[in-house]
Image (cartoon, rainbow, N blue to C red; front, side, top):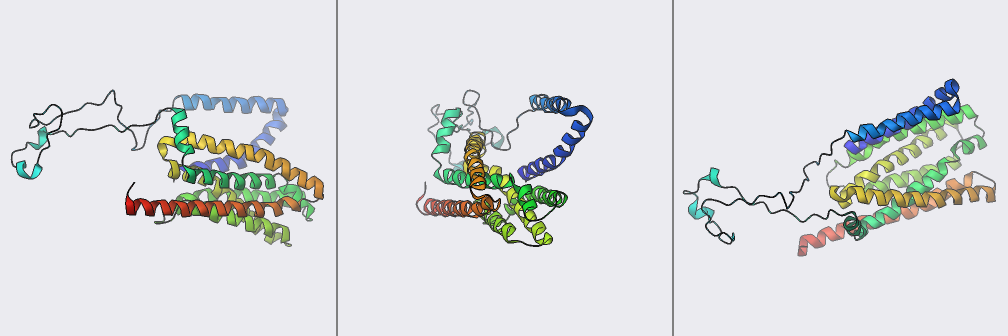
Length: 314
């Protein structure tokens, strides 16, 4: 839920910043606008510098600071003697007993955590699927205004529909957090659902004819993108755990960035080659269909692993 609320703040910022940039450019020109935005962004360094990391229930005891305590009844210094609670429960002073805490071995090095993440093949499949989803969605957004104007809408109408899409994008970022509260719902099913929604709405935008049809489909497209972006954090944390989250999320964003580079270039080549803005919106369903298959495959493999662990143990 916390990650969903963070996503909502990001969406609100994405809607507010363009208006702020226009206001600053009108009053201080583009160079003054860059100076002010640079100063605002630079304050993030100060904000993060005063933040104190706080682990939520996952803090592991450090080996060098761990104190091993013994009960007053344990005479063997090697801790090999076991106390039979049933036989001695009437003679044990409960306040004098402190159980030994054995620290877990935690992989703390960045390279070690990268190896752990790399061996998580379910997360690897998720990386491929989500990178394909977001890279092709982003490439379609590059031409969204030109695409709408090519269908006969004015620039003002296209901007209004784009605003509706951003509002839907922002509100839908809360959906993954609410959906994860549903019991027995695999976290990998949600990206498949939202990716399917973006695929169908992309085809619908090409075939739509009326203004209201475009408004509804733009909202659906924005909803799918917003929910998918929130699923980045939620699914990553679910698959790799909080202790490996930062490394795994860094790998995920790197792969998405590299895919976005070639996906945007390929989309631009398709527009130039075909001479129409419809082509990228036909390419989105093809790519998203592959992503849905990857998500479903990862969910099936995860379920099979759980059943195998339940039957035969780790």
